[in-house]
Length: 544
View 1 (spheres, rainbow, N blue to C red):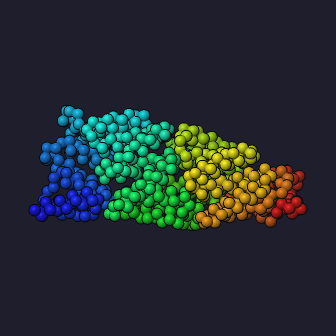
View 2 (tube, helix red, strand yellow):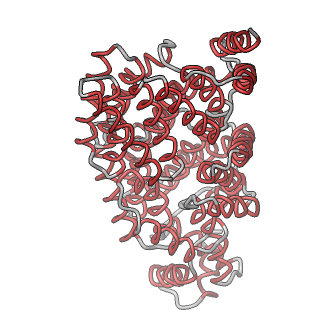
């Protein structure tokens, strides 16, 4: 009776999503007497929700053997499939393959159609997607969904539809893919699925949205995941993922202190769970926020922590080097990262920084090449709202550097509007800096001043110290420029102030070679031959 009472209390706590109580009751019952396979599955699920991944796997093994002992081969096969998935997620592919093979043998032994055949398609879908065989993954997922529907298994149907959605989105059929992901989420939000499947689909759908730059959907589903997690005080497993994605969205929305707090909490939680790559993602998010705030030492430390956990610290670290005045190091780092990244969506996360850095060191040819690559990816994933904003911004910057200011303004206005619609004030303000430069080059000083003032207000509110410093060098009226570009005017003012090329390079975050080229251009355009003559010209014509 004691064991039965503990099992009953465990079941009630499980149904109420009180994972700590469910685990405690079922574990006590298991200590007193052997549990049946179904009860061990409940215990395993409770362990998983509490973040005890290894215990989940070991308890599922016990459930597998209990089902075998009871003659329930198909239930045993399903446990074996999940054990394989658990091991694969931990990178233990050999043992995972062994468990999947065992599950396959048990299913084949039954020699009749069954639901478990659909579950055995899950690892096939994952392997096909990871190898870039998206059409194969789509077809396999469709077969899995059909089996799930035939046997009325909501978990399998949702997992398969979700896998179809990922495959199509990653293949460039973004709108179709997102529609299928939304369909899978209907079952999730309606509470139709088991706890682990619910959490897995939540996290995977949000990850999919981030991968294809579908920011609006990522925001919606992250809010839903946050609410789901909040209803389960004992929940550990999916809270970390929730925190990382929330931190990224908060950063975009401009609530940087809260975003930093979320990222730190996520890194601590993942570290306790010994999940290195996830911990690295959280450290990288911390570094990005610290870099934007101008806390360069802390950002450097966080990027290094991310790298130690296996997370590539680019493009953030290259942008940090640029802020620190080391343009050549920034360029070398971003070139290396882009050259070894082939997957289009991953390249798209590097290319905007690549374009920015190449422009900063004066290599407009490389910047234009990076833009061409980015535009090709954006065209393939044309329904991705955030990718469209990044592409328009990079295009405007390249056009501005090439001297086509009117064309640049059209691209930059498109980018600014896109960032506004995405509720990303910092990114919109950065675009306004470029708009100000274009307006000034076209002779519209009033418009340039208003753009700079608007950007300054956003940067001050956010605490974006590096951008405020950069803005200071752009402010002020621009009279007759005597044919000089905005960058050449900046260099001339610093020459007139007595700065060396090295000092100018540090202030403007460009290379000394680029400064020297600007100085030679200034001499040629003004018909001068020395820094002294250039300084005198600047003062005589009110250019300082």
